[in-house]
Image (cartoon, rainbow, N blue to C red; front, side, top):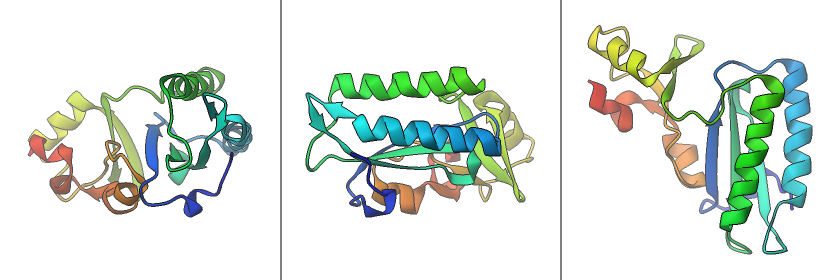
Length: 160
């Protein structure tokens, strides 16, 4: 069952998928329609899952799931990953590669392979104050407080 992301409890599980580029206006519209259709019918063992989504900065897909009524099962998680893979293929995006880092460079949002980010840290092209997107957060509470933070406050701090 599709619910507004804002109505999900702070304990809702989240999955964050970062795109290797900004989506176009047309891609955003199509992705929203696809997400709404998928989440409206997403189930675990025949039970409706209460889920919502966000698409911050036209670069991320954030899926939230209220596990109070029904938790995700292995099959339902597989279905969501398959759905994300379909979006990757449809739009020519990379959404599932976790070996990349997304961060702010001024007003611009940059996306770099982890090795490149590490080199940038060594050369001082990014600092501990660089705002990074910590896609390892696991619930809505962490997402709202710890997703977009200085590198010093996330797992990225090991590069400094």
